Length: 95
View 1 (cartoon, rainbow, N blue to C red):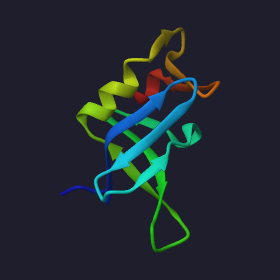
View 2 (cartoon, helix red, strand yellow; view 1 turned 180 degrees about the vertical axis):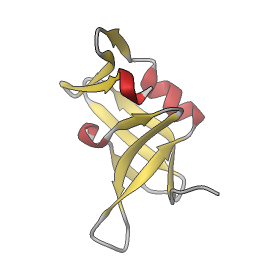
View 3 (cartoon, rainbow, N blue to C red; view 1 turned 30 degrees about the vertical axis):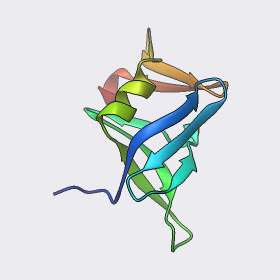
View 4 (tube, rainbow, N blue to C red; view 1 turned 180 degrees about the horizontal axis):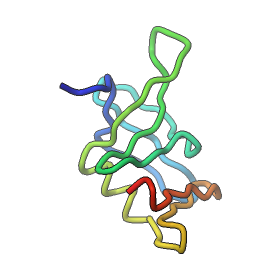
């Protein structure tokens, strides 16, 4: 049973300019890099809920997951990715 309502099936953009998320419900939404999180085997971000004024978790599906993570860099603290000039750190505890 999935614990999320939304899935990111593809991306459009670049690390420097940012990404548009293509969600499985047909919506497109700009990725907020500050909401990006990695948990073992799971990359997620927050997206808006269409009928409520709250954010919901969206899970990256295989192709979108790999498209984004091909820009990841290893460092002393684990891994990081820089999106729109913002460095997001995924520390060793998140792997």
